Structures are given as structure tokens and as C-alpha cells.
Image (cartoon, rainbow, N blue to C red; front, side, top):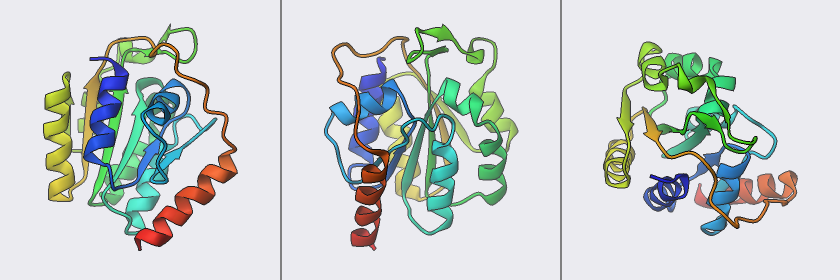
Length: 186
């Protein structure tokens, strides 16, 4: 499954809910599907989607999906312990695992030798490991519908979708739009 296919599923399941998106090509690809006020693109903030998602869930904003790449999750590995410790209901930590830093010349990530699903389980998170769009849809729908905490490691193919434009929006403007979405939703 291509990353763009996984993002379509995530965007569909969480269509009316907040999605906190890691930086780089994944953020650009999600934005290419249609920019929503409910999407918070963390430009230049690698490894922090899980932490921001945790903060939102602890603040009562649920359901919420925090989407990381394998490289960004490994960079922000300490968030797994925090998420497991606080165990906020309604948070889905979604890790798109292609074993590479696709945004950085497809350099292999440590996920080539480290099992991210095992790391999540080791931290105490209920974890699903999926590799197709229907399996992803099923697991995310279940986690979202039950309002529980869940980690989902999604096996995706390497590379980036072709011809996706850069996401050059001002990060402050993205934050304001997302904050307004949260205020209107409350």
C-alpha cells in the first residue's frame, strides 16, 4: 500500500476529527487530499505528532489521530512512554512504516532493524500491525468507535507520491486555523 492510500483511509475515518500530522512528504500528501481546518500539519517538527496528540487527548479533545512516520516516531521515541503512562482514551497513534526517511532521499530508517509494533507493545500500548487499506480502515474505525487508546503500525511501500506540491503555508496560520476548528467544535 502506498502512503497516500493509507492517508486517504485515515482522512476518511477521522473526517470530522482532529488529525495531527508529522512533517515532510506525509504532510504534503495529506494536504493534497484536501486541506481541512481539522488537520494540524507539524511543519519542521519531526517526532512531535504523538506528543501533540497526547496533549490534545489529555485536554479532552477526542477522538484524535496522531500520525507519525517510522523515522519521526523513532526520533520522538520517548512519546511512547508518555502515551502509555497517561493512557488517554480516544487517541490513535498511527505510525506509517516504510523503513525509510522518504522525505530525505529515501535514506533507510532504523525501522529496518527495529520492530515498531513491538516497541509500542513493549511500552504497554494495545497495538495493531496492518498492511492494507481495508485492515487499516477496520482497525481505525474500531479504535475511533470504541474511544480507546490504540497504536496502529501501518506497513507501507517506500517513496513519495509524485507531483505533490510543497506545503509552504505559514505554521502560525496553520495553528490559528486548527485552534479555531477546536473552538468551534467545543
